[in-house]
Amino acid sequence: MKQTILDFPYHNDYNLEDFVVSAVNEQAFNIINDWPAKWGVGTYKNSLILCGEEKSGKTHLSHIWQQKAGAVFLKPDDNITSKLASNNAFIIEDIDKYLWQEDLLLHIFNIVHSAEKYLLITSKLPVKFLAINLRDLASRLKAVLDIKILMPDEDMIRMIIIKHFSQRSLNISPELLHYIANRISRNFSDIFDVIKKIDELSLVQKRNITIPLVRNIL
Image (cartoon, rainbow, N blue to C red; front, side, top):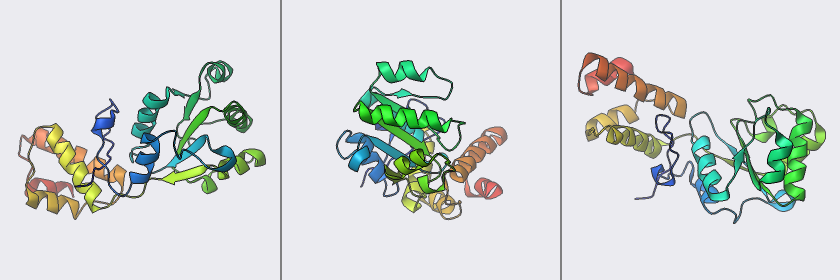
């Protein structure tokens, strides 16, 4: 069976061995795991942008790369000058969320490439949908290799469900697995939300996780 990569929000060790690989995230995993080979392309070969929806595994992959590359996370309120001078690899998470000054992002980008350092950027939105006004920054980001984690397929959904129950030392019948996997929404946030609700309802009502219980959630 092909390995599958998963990110579980209730588990925050972010270890490599906690991942299982499916087609939806195989490309992203291979590039992170094989760093620095095939990290980027062209002029900006030392940068990579990783896109994917909430809870798709971007943070987990970022931490795996952090351990491999000795990278540091950058935030808008950090002492950026000091971090850029004393480190060789950097992670900017959720570039679409944080209120970064565009000239500061451009400065980081230029330092990384002029000094042959490395940069990983994560975003829920693809680069072409980012609201960037600074033309030089926009053009550089569009030239960076952009890897997308796809929406979960049925194999991924089943692995998420199995992994969750196994971490609680619970068995799940093939019938229940089939029932949940064929009725749950096809996005990561909803999948984890439903699993959490099933968990909570089972604990509150002190009931086994069965199709009748799951039916109340779905």
